Length: 473
Image (cartoon, rainbow, N blue to C red):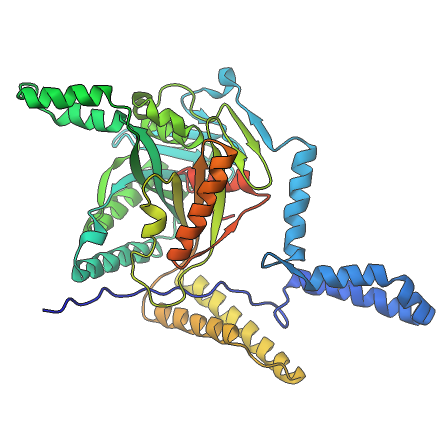
């Protein structure tokens, strides 16, 4: 009997369309200024004026037309400018003030503007994180899987379809601003094994069980711990200064609906994340070696945020680790197995956090976005035909992706604006470089293209390593 292969998946290309001939508004503006300088110099002083002003209009033209690392120079300028300003004003370093920042209901974390308020739900005990500046309240679920890769292709197809229905249901709930799926691999020492053993072993077990307990008590072997969280950010009424009963009820209803959808998709919801558990999770993101100590991460005792953070151009350093954050710039563009992320997520010994951030779009908003993009493609094609420039395969592929998205929306599917982020952690700079090379190799196996978020590592770490649904960069 021949097994039926699992349904393949394919992603669209990274959209690179522009306003005119592939150039965006910023590039056209800079190029227009260069042309103005050139024309004024030509009419004012002739060839001499053109030669004298050549460094000006030549530099502007280069800024408008040249790309560095796949990104136009005009898009690098804001990143470099913000980085320089933050360096000048010493905003790239953060030092905790334990006497001021250790309140049980308030958090001040680097990468977040303003303070975060944690409220415990009176009915479920869930931690509800209120960020006043963004106007959202976030609830977090802790998830476990059922061995997707070990299932037969038919079962895999059912689970993929179920997960698709979960995502589609998000687009039908306008109060949901965004969701974040965080899968984190960390070192657990032997604490996790010991904890499981003492919780499940029988007290009156035979001598062999006692021998195993003694061996575990003396074990120093490092093990891998994998945690998975789903954070849901819900919009609160404008001007809200605190989380009231109505907001709590609304968030709990959304969490309950998502829980039902996850269970139908055969994804187990272990529990809602309590305030104590959330503090432990946040602490482990800044101090991974604290996981080796075990118990306090479950109870949330001690300091929640980092003792200190130093942001550099290519990485960020926290209490006991160095971190580098990548953006998944390209996903598989050909038919691939749904478990294509296995090399990135399940590599033994890897200390990585994979985050998928998705912002649901209503059908009307998604259709407007698609039709606007189609108009830009049509205008761009007409301009290329006017100057005799041929259309390349990448442009046709982007147009096909837009058509497929529009057909899916008309067919009743939802649309999401999403991004993938990967945080690589290591104990030292040298170890981080080796871990980054291994991560890039694993991404190549998964048919994904990664880009290091240089100049944005502090904000990227907050978005990628913390289950708080911070939002897209």
